[in-house]
Length: 162
Ligand SMILES: [Zn+2]
Image (cartoon, rainbow, N blue to C red; front, side, top):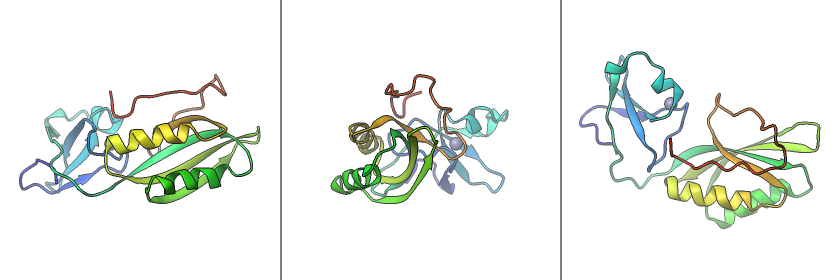
């Protein structure tokens, strides 16, 4: 899958890289390589730069789970609309979780099976088009961005770019 020769590779859970992302390998003590996004704080702040190795995406055909956070005004039918949009894109949703903020806004956390950055980018822009949605961000467990002060203003973020 990845161009790292004989080493065992696995994708880091902290940042969930998908094909097309800039990535870096981190050699683990068990002589495997964990692949992070190049801008992942866990990889950047390791302090052991000699353990970082260059890796690149090889041919892939598999799917990669990506966590996405959708901020929206709370409304009836929101979850249904998100689910329908994802299904119509023929994308598999591995999980969905809703957090109500008590101020008429909600955050919906979904995990989608994506083929790579292009697929992910398309999904993000479709989700931004769902009625009531104010922001869509790629997230990773433990690195969810704090809420923007400017509520109701869409926050766009280019995906996969440093
Ligand atoms: Zn990482």
